[in-house]
Image 1 (cartoon, rainbow, N blue to C red):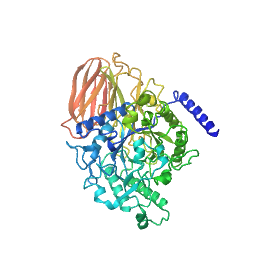
Image 2: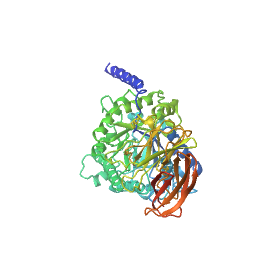
Image 3: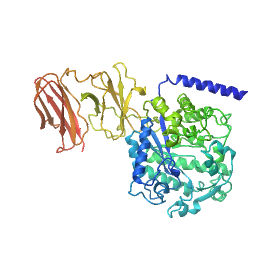
Image 4: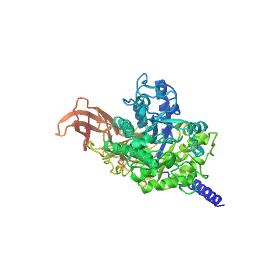
Length: 613
């Protein structure tokens, strides 16, 4: 009877969430990610042909961008192999078809993935499997693989059947795999921990990744008995209980990775994705495999020690039952909140249509709603991107596009890493050209500091009285690091715009609004003599200068250095009433600050511009 009452209470709660969510404002900060699995070529790549690989990855990232997702968890090391150019581990056989063989024609998939993700405003978190050394007959075969170079580091463990594992299993085959022999790097050996750390830091040092991510493959689900007894005897570090020692082996690795990342690139985030149940019976009503004792994984210790930035427990279950999402998720959120860290839940849209589970279409939407209404939870990571998200099972992708992810969102800020915003833009101008508004912004002087802007967020408000920056409905766009300092908008009449700078962790500067409260279509003649800020600025070697002439007049537009010496005259002629555009090519000039002066019969305006070669 108690269970029934609890379930009724949960159903009522879900009904309330479904009713209220429509009226709720979507969050401006939310982690919206999916795992891109490369092991067994589950999501990518489906071919060894380089052109097909690139095309497929672009298609995946395009799909994520269209759904306003902002992070990709990209698997680059499934079994001590590499989906990137490594001098430590061999190329993955799932990349090229042959372990140790580089792509032909050559390219670095991780460089390609980072560049394409960043073009779309998507963070790239590099996903490592820390210990798994061999999964099938085609991996671990090359002479350069650690399985062959250091057989003394390998543990062959497993063949323990556990009924609890059915709560986690991806499908029937995965259930069987968890009963089979596993080959893993021995977590108890200090040399192994140093080796794994070296692999991770090699990537951190050489690639422009946004995060390091590890999943739940620590000690194997298939079980471990006395296979590491000799290591325990040789390297017990004073532990007398082998379970405590195994958990500490994992903790030592994670802490060393966190400390090393922060010493080299503090802005690179470190996230862990453990099994979704810490201990059976915690919280009350939860039953299933205990990650604490089955795979010697203690995420609570990682949070308590504050040596991760975010936690993504794999909560691959629905509401109600022995693995009730409605109980587990709030419990994890509390653990993260009290330790000032972020919870991004691992969710399982692949179970919407698989034969074992066949979830209702509203299961995942209800989970998103509960996340948004739970303090300490800041987003979702979906398993997997091509099976559960982009294939749109029971309309799930449609619901993201039209409802939950209708508006863009920034990945959540992490104040414990950095809370200092970048410097503000010093000017924002809006000009009309060819039926479109051109929104430009910039800085009067070059920004070369730790707080240098990484990209920009552009707001668009329907009238001058509404300048709300908390509602993502008013986010017109978020630029990428490679975008120029301008955007265009064809629907601009009566709107005003604001621009703020963002740093790498999405700390936001003050918002600078556009010159004038609103702009009108070009049929309206200029009301005054106006010189706009050049675009782009800084520039190399060309920039555009726009000016308004309120009445027919003789106009001069000239370039000067800071000593007031005339360098070039761009315009020296009679101009009719209206808006005029001039391009200045400064290819023969040296880098520096220049002045451009606009003169009419009764007015003079001077502005600065910056040439940076």
